Each structure stands twice: as C-alpha cells, then as structure tokens.
Image (cartoon, rainbow, N blue to C red; front, top):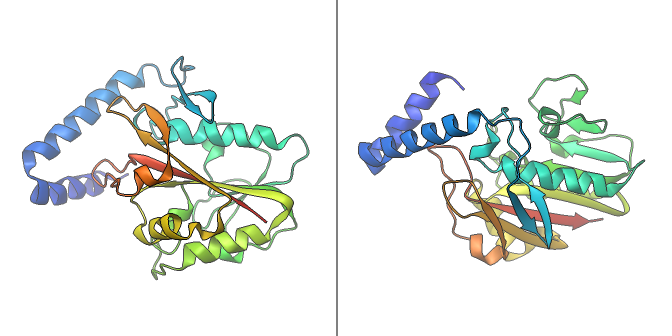
Length: 240
C-alpha cells in the first residue's frame, strides 16, 4: 500500500476521532507488528477453537497475519479444503490461499493477476463443473461495493450464482468480515441469504486472539477502517 494512502487514512480518522487516539492506535499497531515480525513464518503454538476443534493461528509474513483476521481465516479454509478429500473439485473465489500455501484448485479473481488465476467477475464465472467445494475467503464483501458501479444487491446474486455451480451435496464456504459491507451484513442477519449455517468469530483483544460466538453477537461489531482489519468474521456455509 502506498504511503500516501496510509497518510490520508490517518489524517481522515484524526479529524473525526482526534489525533491522540489515532496516533496511539497506530503506535500500538507498529509495536505489535515489530513484536510479531521476528516470529513470522514459524508455527504457532497458540490455538483457537471452532466447533470443538483446535486450530493453530497462522503467523505469516504476507499481509502480517499475526495482526488481523487472516490468522484464523486461512487455517479454517485449509481445514475445510482438507476435509473435501482427494479428488474433490474445488473452486476458490478470490486469490487468497495461494499466498500462504500451495494450491492445485481452480482460482478466479476479478482483479489480481497471477499465474493460474482466471480474471473474471464472480457473477460471470462459467467454468466446467460442478464443484464439490467453493471457497471464498474475505472476498464476497467487496462484490458490489469496491467496484466502479456500486450495487448493494450484487453479493446476493454472487452467492446464488456460486451455489448454482455446486454439485449435489456440494458446499459453498466463505468468510465475511463484519462491518465491511453493511448491506451484505444486513442480509446475513435477517434472512441469511439461504445459508445452511452461520457462525462467527470475534477478536478478544489486541493480541489477535479469537473465539467462536453466535452470529447475533457480531451484528454491531464495526470494521476498523483505520487499521483495515476486522474485529469479527462471519463464517457462512451454503448448499446447492
């Protein structure tokens, strides 16, 4: 990220929250970045629990996961991927996992250019299927929001389209940071967009520890637009 972008973000927040609190948050973030950087890439002994299963937090230098939601999202996605079994037909929407581990499944991403990644809009995906598993890690919240033309209804259409790509008994599994896309959040908390299961994880403190909580407990959790991190993540699962 460019320095001018970071500076602009800090200035905007300082105008509304005051320079002192904003600079204190930035200083805390910097100290935690330095403290974690020396251990980045080493296996973590600390764990978080989801549905009774313990997962190790991810400490990876890419996107400094020891400071954000990637610490839990990537281990959970990896577990879901492993659970699909050998020979499963898998599609990932948003090029995320390849930054942290080798992948051999199909990947689509509207914007990111990378070897093996098909650049296509999520609602226009037309790949040979069907798929046993479709993964989307912190991707669907950008649909219809971080685009030239904003369209609050587009995430729902994207989910419906991805479900149509599933094989019978297939699964769409995605993580969505709470507070990033208010229109998508509202649908998840009201009608669920047809999800077969919705749960959530919430950050418990500045040390980036997380715990599983019911969806209702993250309804009003704001997104941190200063540090560009989530304080809660919704885990949504859909069937065909």
